[in-house]
Image (cartoon, rainbow, N blue to C red):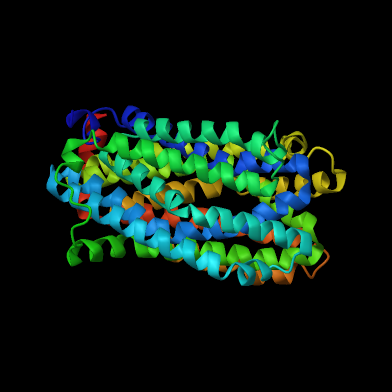
Length: 459
């Protein structure tokens, strides 16, 4: 039972693909929560989309805190499994679950207390502001389930089992798909709840997902036997988890804060561009969620092989992953550039002005998809080695540069399009610099250098 989850043996392409496909499916499922909200709320109007999208900044910001235990689980479990240290893997499971529950409760409480100030920051119209606050409060009441599901997913992925979290997240999505139209538009005695209905549907689905995760993980006895979740945390493991997750969490938090600042710039053009960015980012997520699947797969693959000291597989695995995500990035570029109009029209079909702005957004962002994909996947390779700082530094610097670039370019003849160009070009720079750094690391690492000729000779 344990050996079938090992990533240190077998054909690398087959192992990576087999691991990555369910992770990609899980990523799409997680993306589909907000995408389904956008599709159904788009039938209500762009104001409803703007409201849920604005409140969504704070669920997005939540990832900065979720990432802390998530990366700790992903890397800690994978490296422990690679070393056949299942007691260590079990301790990473216990400490990351303890940490994510506490963080979720604190974060949800903070959102409820400061809801007016948080939403008021964006200076939206009164009607949109009221809807956004309603959405934020409802989601905050159940946000602990939103927090814990990615950590459960990371535990399974680090263990080498990516199919189980895919199935569980698919079940939760099915619940969300069923509830969204019922609660948003109303059916029979159930009233039309609009934005509130979308929030209730999402949290209900997340709760059901958590219950199924709890049931499923209990079957992994080597990870859960004598887990003692109420036992006092050990300082050494908390320190290790924070060391692994903090740089990535800081990057994610910074990314969201920068996005909020850009959102404030965009709001100067009214509510419509906010809706365009929210819908456009959901469409663009097709590529970054796919690349994110390979990011997680590479993290688990590199982590287990790092634990097993199989440097030749790390070297070949990275380049195999880059070939795959490169193809994905090129496909995404073609899709967003040439299919922009029909794709965006599907989300908000009855507002020509919004559609026109959305087409421009997708085409500009489409130019950076290849670079974004290789940057995201390379981050996973760094994470698997336990080196979470380099991708975080690159991410924070170039994502941060979007804000002054957006401010400056939006005051030129480019106008609002200058904001979109600032986002797209920063992704290009990240996609050039981070992979170059990793390739330099591979070429200089003495363990890999000694084995490269042996790999080439065997092939």
